[in-house]
Length: 163
Image (cartoon, rainbow, N blue to C red; front, side, top):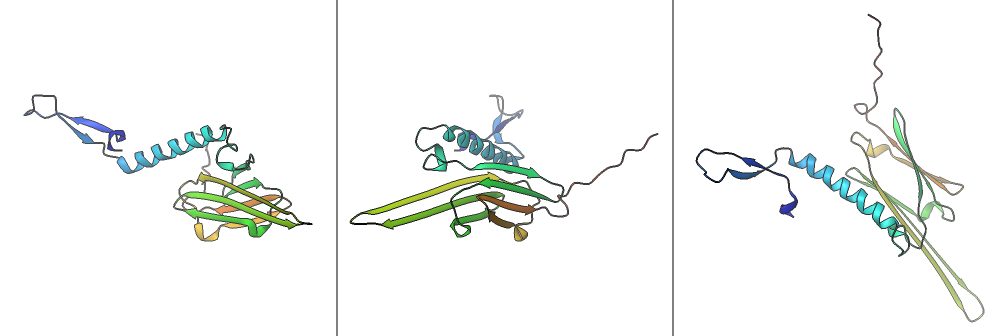
């Protein structure tokens, strides 16, 4: 993995080979950005795979809509056929993970029928969200997750004055 890390050449007068390689200075934020870009690239690639439409499972994908408001982010996911208890929503660091699992068993005359749907979606969240006040509701086939922003992350209007 270290071969993927960004390096810069440090020139020294004593070395005759042009210097030594040293790690780039802003490595943590650069690595986080690089990880985000690789995750998004993989998710876009995996959605077009023939094996169940990628990570969504069973050929079904979330219909996600993300709205960035002044005081919060609102994520809406089309998820028909589920119940509120079928969802598992988690926030780890700055990653929102939505999972839904629906199991249905029916027993008829001499036969059993079992249907299982499991869906998964995850997305990166911006800095400055209030993880303790996240609210999730499910109504009429739509899951709505409201993610409040902290005071520091809220947009501040700047008035423009004529000079």
